[in-house]
Length: 246
Image (cartoon, rainbow, N blue to C red):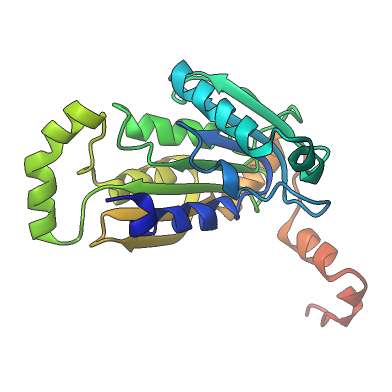
C-alpha cells in the first residue's frame, strides 16, 4: 500500500516541520522528506541540512531529488539564503560529521531506518552522541514501523518477516518501543511524545534531553546555569514581580 494512501507522507511532513537549527537526517535513503523541511523565506527554522546514508546510490538519488526540487533559479531564491546543504555517504553507527557550525545538531531525524539496520540500538545511541544535549530544545524525531499492539497482526508480521527482509532489507516486526526506551534510558533522553498508527505498526517519536542531561552537557562546555538563572532570563523585566523567597 502506498505511503500516500496510508498517510505516511502526512506523518513525514509533520515530523520534518518540527526540525529546527542544524538538522541531521540519518538513513536519508532517496530523500522522501526533502520537500517538507522549513527552509524557505527569512523566517525559515532550518539553518542547515546534512543528509547521510550508508548507500552511495541512495545518497546520489537524494541529491538528484534535491536538485529537481530546488535547482531552478526561482526555487533557489526562495530558500533561506544562509542555508547549507550537505550529502554524505557513511554509517550512522560510526562517527558522523559535526554540523556546519562546528557543533552538534539541534535536530536529528530518521524515518524508516531502525528496521533496516542490524544494530538498531547502537544506531540510536550514536544519534544521541551527535545531538546538542546542552540545548533543551534539541530533538530526535523518529518515524518507524515495527510490531503491533494486536497479537493477530504480530502473527502476520512474524510469519512474513524473514521473507520480507530478504526482499526489502527491512525487519518490520521489531519492538520499536523497547528499542527507543532503552536508548533513551542509556543516553539521558526522555520521550516527549509517542504515537502509533495502523494497528500500532507505525511509530512516531519525539525525544529530548532530560534536564539533568542538559545541565551535565553545559557543565562540560562551561555553560552551566542554575535553574533559577534560566528562569530569571526568561522572565526578563518581569523578574521583579517574583515573590521574595523566605
